[in-house]
Amino acid sequence: MKVTREFILSGKSGAGGWTKRQLQILGVGWPPPKRWMKRVEGKTISDSAAKEFIALTGQKKRFRYRCIDKPNHTFFVKVDAPHEPSFCVVCGALATRES
Ligand SMILES: [Zn+2]
Image 1 (cartoon, helix red, strand yellow):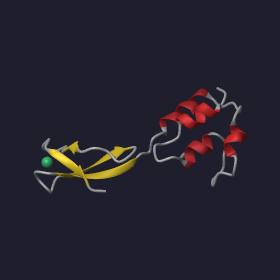
Image 2 (tube, helix red, strand yellow; image 1 turned 120 degrees about the vertical axis):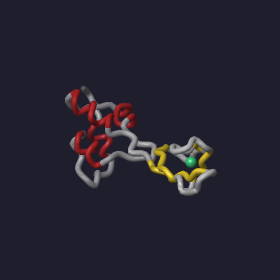
Image 3 (spheres, helix red, strand yellow; image 1 turned 90 degrees about the vertical axis):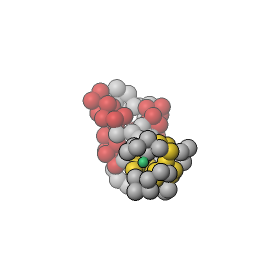
């Protein structure tokens, strides 16, 4: 398939970047040179490479949550951005974000 700007942007993670492997798939070295996006637009990559590129999207930031009821219950949630409270994965009580 043909690499378009939309395709490249759709592989961007919530944290705002691409992984080394994703850029490798596009034929971009590490660290990526300036204006690398312009250089790869219009390039053709295989369908399986495109699939891998998208599959690697969203290496999201992990946040630690702690259960309100049982402070020893802590767990991690992967989210794009600071998020509202979640529920404890152990007991289901409300949990708050710590980091
Ligand atoms: Zn709990």
